[in-house]
Image 1 (cartoon, rainbow, N blue to C red):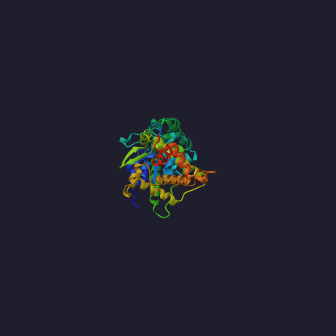
Image 2 (image 1 turned 180 degrees about the vertical axis):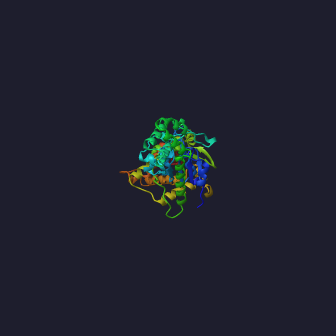
Image 3 (image 1 turned 90 degrees about the vertical axis):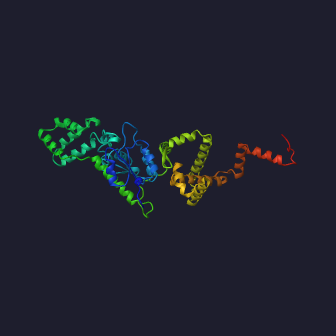
Length: 397
């Protein structure tokens, strides 16, 4: 199966340049994730998604529920390096795959604060270049210096404490050395300077590389057409109503390759003359389907396929245009099947109405009640009288 760049979507910023990610694997690189970006990325139909970098303060951070929704949609979600490590530690029980040492620190409670991975960086125009040092990188260097016998236990802790005392937007290696100098002896300072001159490691970068590689390996081994293909880690079903409502607003609909925010589509639909009727019809269908499920009744794959075929016939869309039509409808194949399953359950409830309730309503009762409410009963009665020359009412008002 030919690999698409969109099979692997990666959210990157200061942890790893996009050019390096492209060298590791075919992928689509997006900027640090904000709230709603994961939902928007799902319109690309990725097989795996990597969250490394995300925003912290200036804008709302990526939401846990959109990552859960991605997994529910069958996308493998990996996290590491920065915001991704934090979210993976929080959602590992739900199937998000954490990669790297920073993820392990969060998972094991070695670090707990979001600020451990925070840093000041340049903007997109300048490649998100890091301008300060995250605390996790200082912890990593302190451990490396201890193993190299450059620092003892107390000296390594003093280095971490000095770095932690600095605001993340001011934490540079020069400022860290200045802050820790009073706690170190002259020989320790000299040993550190000589060792530091050989170069330090960027732990966030190393974890980001490992995370992209892990996700790329998953994609290469998870051809959905292959027998025995790997299952998506931790796929969930039935997202909460909160997730469903937020996704309606945060998602993206694609029309002819162009994107429009689904929230704008919904806003336009709300103002349509038939909006209330559409919503009521959807609620009736959802309530009937939910009730049928609660009774333990199910529909077969064949019944769902029949509903799907009928839906396509109603739309009158040619086979070659179906994928584009689904995208413009804010749907994909699994989403359409879910809606058609609901239609099949609704049809089951209607067909079995007289049995589903004690002394339940018949088809004719339902027809009569709706016709009386809608005025069609009165119209039919008058039509019969008008067309019956022997009726006492013929020719009446």
